[in-house]
Length: 182
Image (cartoon, rainbow, N blue to C red):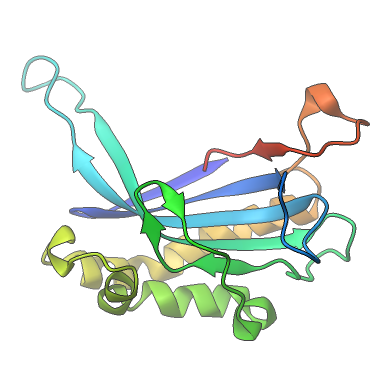
C-alpha cells in the first residue's frame, strides 16, 4: 500500500516494506518488515493534452528516509531495525543511522522530524530553495494526517496483512528481497 502527501515542491510517501538485505551489516541479518517513509521532491509534469487533461505528477528524488522496521524473527512491534537515512547521494541512501529514540517511539520521532523541514533539508544537504515557500508550514500542518497513515500501515503489518514476503518465493530461504512501493 502506498500513501502520498504532496505540497508545492515537497512530498511525503509511505509504504509497507518487506526487505531482506543481500549484504547486511552484522547483527542485521534476516528478513525485516515494517514501514518506509520518504520525503521526496515533487514536480508537476507537462499537461499531455488540453487544459482539462489529467496532469502527470512526478514523485522525484528522495531527500530523507525513515525505515520503521523490525526483524521478522523478532517480536512484533519491537522496531529493533528502525533507522533513518539523513541524506541521499542521488537515488542511493547513505548508511543506516540508528537512534534509540527512533526505536523507542518511532511515530513521535518521525513526526518531530517532519515538523522541522528546514532542519531536515539542511541535514540532507539539500538547498532550502528545493522546497516551496509554504512547504514547511503545510507539511507541519499535515503531520497528524501523515502519522495516521503510517499508524494504519503499521497496524496492517502487525495483522500480517502488509509487508509480506514475495508470494512466488514463500517457504524459500530468501537472501535478497524487496516488496514495497518504495
